[in-house]
Image 1 (cartoon, rainbow, N blue to C red):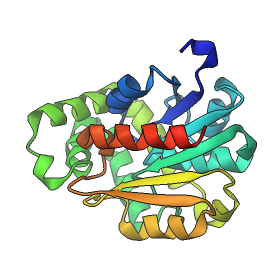
Image 2: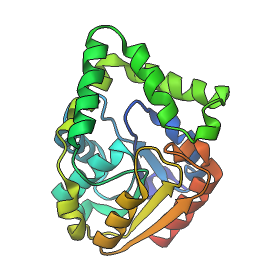
Image 3: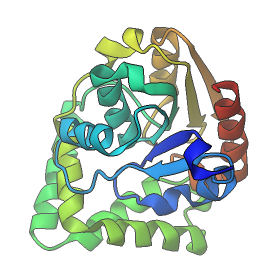
Length: 237
């Protein structure tokens, strides 16, 4: 299909992740879709990330967002809901940062400012994965490489953006487009309660749970996620 006629699909990554977290999905979906990767590495607020996405992307698109990318997606929908054909939220949650989370992020910021970004990466990387995959050196190497490619300065901007994010629960009921939630059963960050909260509040919403999977669903269960997104995007046409 010619690029000009393929529907645009915008992918938004989570913190410490790059376009590499979408590699299996890009390979699977590119024949039928114009895949775009949102650039949120130059901004330190969710609002600025959303504004950049809206400025750089086509007039209409399907939006697929992972983790922190979901916070950006919620802001995009508050600002320009008419531009989003469909929404897929992977491993994300809607509330604002909680005090304990903010305190932990401030600790990360202090470590990074003291030159200990590598220590933060080594603490964060295992949390992204199902416990059984935390010894998978191949997968760990991919995630560590994404973290290093993100770098200390971009990580600091991401932490500041996440800490100051809005409570998106207040706007879930206004999301006008069909929405798919994808969540790994063993996600150590986004909980089942977060998913059921969104499922109940978003008007046209469905939830798919992936068993034996942690937070990084796109790389832990790529074939499953590829199939879910292919079916979802086809339905949304």
